[in-house]
Image (cartoon, rainbow, N blue to C red; front, side):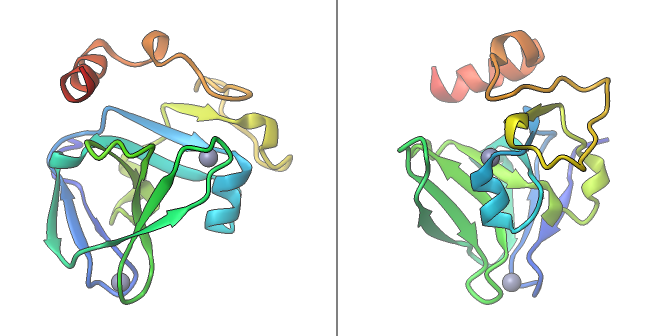
Length: 155
Ligand SMILES: [Zn+2]
Ligand SMILES: [Zn+2]
């Protein structure tokens, strides 16, 4: 059902397909994501880099300062500069795909809401989805199969 999801940038020069469902989907309400997107939050699908098939174009990495001190690289279309995914802490095996760039962003609703301490007050979160003031313990929240996939890339 969630296999073969496709997405791309605003101008259409970058197109991609996800080979499988992501491991987990974050909705991040931190100040950095708010500033980078100019919006209330960002939705990131965490997936192995080798499960993203580039169908067209080649996003270029832009280094962005992060509060954590760990470098973040945001990959953007060279033409229209839409951000399609990012990478944290130099971990090239894992991508954070921006769900808003999917052709059907309803396909990947958030599994968790994080950094709700800076959530904008007029955003109301659903009761059924776990939410955390800051980060969370993925070992307690991720499905076993997703933890296994993460172990496969990071050991
Ligand atoms: Zn573009
Ligand atoms: Zn964030």
